[in-house]
Image (cartoon, rainbow, N blue to C red; front, top):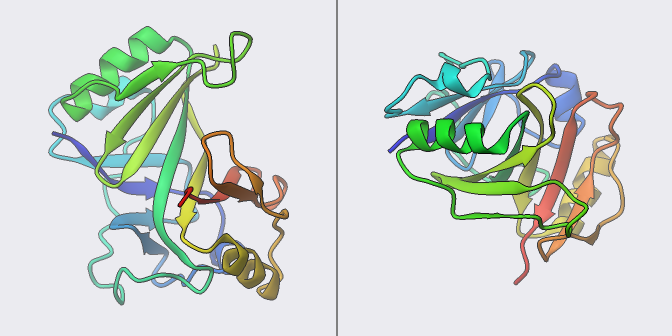
Length: 196
C-alpha cells in the first residue's frame, strides 16, 4: 500500500518559522511526514504500486528528514498532519488513480457541505487523510491542515512568532480550526484540533 511520506510546501524558512514550526535544513517533520519547504506543492509516496504522475501532482523525490532532530511536537503544538487538500477536475478519475497509487479505495465519498457543495472523497494514507475535492479545476494541492491537540496553544504560539492566524472556530468535521492568513504564503494553511 502506498503511504504519503513526503510533502513539498511553498514558502521560505522565515514564513514557516512565523507559523511556529522548527525548520532545519530546508524542512521539518510532522507526524512522520517529511515536509520540504520553498518548493511547489508536491508529494511522494512509499511503496506506491502505480505511477504517482497519474495524479497530476509533481512527485517529490527527495525530502528524507531522518537526520532532523526528532519528530516531536513543534513550538506551535503541531504534532501531525490531519489532511492534505487535493483538487481534481473529475472525482471518478481521481478516485481510480489514487486507489491505484495507494492500493485501496476511499474511506468515504459524499458531499459534506450538502447538495450544493462539491463531492469529496477521503483516503487514509499513513497518518494523514487526503481530501479529494471535485473542483473542475486542474489537479493541485491548494492547502493543508496541520493537527494539534491544543488549538489555543497553537494560536498563541503562532501569534508569539508574529504569524498571521485567525481565531479558532468550529470545523465542519467537528473539532475546531484556525487558519493562517491566505496572503501569508498564498496557499491554504489551517491548524485543526480534532473533537475529543
